[in-house]
Image 1: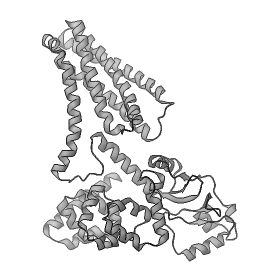
Image 2: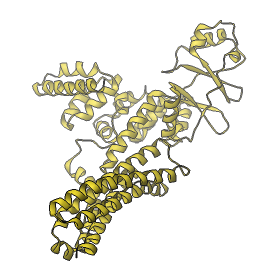
Image 3: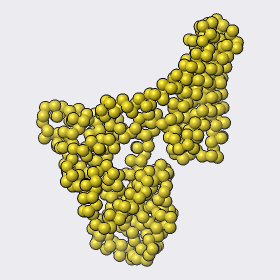
Image 4: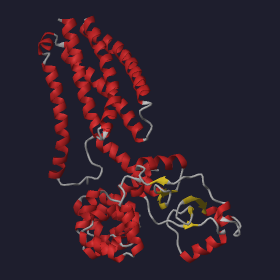
Length: 451
């Protein structure tokens, strides 16, 4: 499915580019508006700015607001900049409250005032409620648009109430049962409403097995709950167990996608909200910061090598073998670091299991180091016809793979304690440690045993 979607997207971009080049915008408009808002957003992110703006002006106004929700922050800012205030008000006026909350800060102040003025008092109150919580929390993810019923009524009463209401929020698989003070009691399945006898009491059909999600639960933990329970939607409650909203699977999918993008981009020091076609000067500034950190790490490794200049001059073989030790330690450490970052993101690593995990990784590092030391040491000894060189590089490999395992476990734990994203900074710190330790260990042992 993923390969099909990727091929289809590539073909759509090609077809759009061809049509724009010929100036035939009517086929472009038909093609664009035949897609979903999310697909349009993906296409816009894939186009250079000049063509992006041409396509954006062809998007039907009914889609505009939803498309803005589905593009990254930087692209959204560029699209908003070319829109008139009345266009923005029209585009965002029909958005669901949770989607509106996601992009409200990106809108001009004049547009925000007009949008709020066009809303009724209840919707403004619900929007304020959503905006009061961090974006990466259950409160920030939830929509306050929920349908509630009482426990002491029949299904027939509920059905008549829904018909009078006229519509249900998207992805409604359950109605939520509350008491007079709004406290969450459980949920009523839509399937029960449709299949059970109309005279049945709601109280007899309440599913109380699912507790409400706390407002302050992190977005990642919310995603884990949805994954473990296969939910389509879930209620959100405050500290007093009052129902305040619900989270739906489409919002959770966005969380999972954003987290995956963040992990991948952070490894290279990039931001997942960055426009891939951002101006060169802006991209240079952003990437230079990360390159500078890596340069410092490289200079530190170079300094460590310079301390053994005499050893390298006398035993030239060390210069040829030296990169092997640092490289293998870095790769082994990166494997452990990736495992740790994934485990922390999934909530699988805490204070109680970090030390057993450290012991395990040290054991893996030692066994791998011992195995590689026999192979590399034997090859080096045969290559240079000198057994001591084989023993030196073999010993250095074992030590550096142990250091890589130790650093791979401890670095993310320490960075997380310091409120620093391990995915962003962990790789640079790890490579610095394994490079320096690898060079110092290998050249130090060479100095001791070969001179």
